[in-house]
Structures are given as structure tokens and as C-alpha cells.
View 1 (cartoon, rainbow, N blue to C red):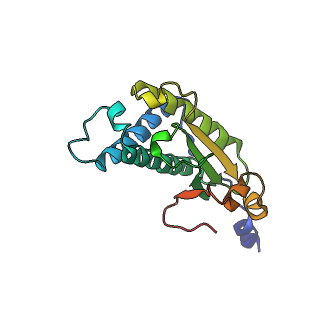
View 2: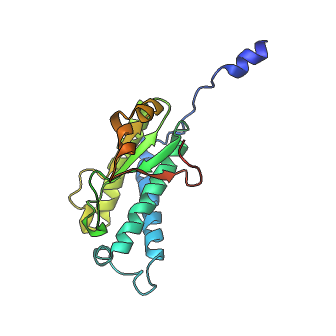
View 3: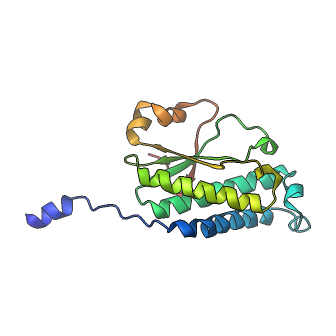
Length: 185
């Protein structure tokens, strides 16, 4: 009986939180890999163009944004094992990638709200802003923040309250970016 009781007890969640000094390198890796993904979708003659020129190409901007969203989602999930899914959302309908304001908005489905996740997202945001400014990409030169991470619980989803209400939206329904192979329950 004692073995059954131990099996039924929940194990504490272990976080793989990086040291504050590591966030700069993490932001560097995330952005460089997202840039590599976006440039890889371009014609070979365009891949070495300057960012201000690439910024004029909607397919580059769209691919970079999607790659960065997916890479950030995967990184958050490795740091915080309680994350069940990550969704991308836009605050307003974006018809044209050229009008993207440089912000990444993610909804993170979690069993319960987590202060640790808030702190991780804020640290990552600051590091992303710093790195993107260093690239001299005009889109990011005046940005104070590029990453918004909001947590949503099953309760909010099932009752359509808070950020859970976004899943009932008509125009701006969140799109799952992590995990890629599993459907949202």
C-alpha cells in the first residue's frame, strides 16, 4: 500500500532555469537560428542581403517571425516542464507581414500560473531586445519589448475567460506553435 501512495503523489516539477548571465547567449542563438531559417527560404542570391533590405520582403519577415516563435516556445518548454502547449496570437489582425511591429505574442498553456515562467519570459525579452538592436535591424531599434508571454490555464480555456477567451475569437484565433505534432485537447 505504501508503494501505491508514493506512486500517486505528484513529483515536484524540476525547472531547468538558466543563469541570468546565459540569457544573452540564448537570445543570440534563438535569433541567429531564426534568421538562418528565414534566409534559407529565400533565393540564394538574396541570402546575403542586409537586414534592412530583407525586411522589405514579406516572406522573409513572416518566416523569421514564425521561426522565432517556435524556437522561443521550445526553449520555454525545456525550462519549464509544466508547459503543455504554446500558441502564437496577434493582438490585431495582421494582413501584411510588412506591418508587423516586431512583437512576439505567445499564450502558454499551463496547469497553474507560474511566477518562474513570468521571470524567465521577462529575462528572455530583455536579452532579445538587446540582441535584435545590435543587429541594426531598423524594425527593432525603437522596441522596448519584443516578447509577451501570457499564461492560460485549463480552467480559463474551458470557461472562455481571461486569455482563454481568445480561443473563441472569430478573427484572431491563436495558432499552436509547440508542440508541433500534438493537437490541443
